[in-house]
Length: 64
Image (cartoon, rainbow, N blue to C red; front, side, top):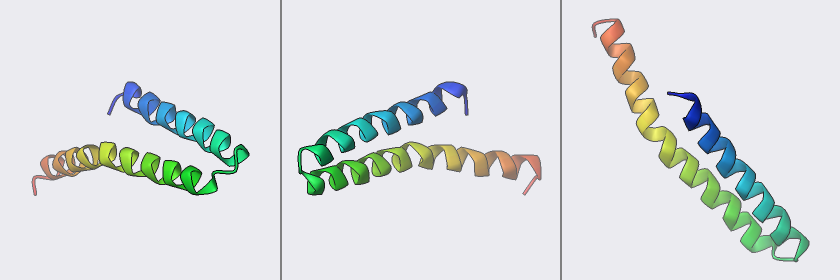
């Protein structure tokens, strides 16, 4: 995992936070909640291949 991956996650977090604040101030709390949930799903979808790669690396290190 390189540093650009962490910057992508941070960027998504910042964008979701700004959209969430804008929607909350506009009185659209339902859409704000959906935006946060969508951001979480996107980040988890990005992390799943990284976790799989981590397990593969651990298996190869310990010769399992």
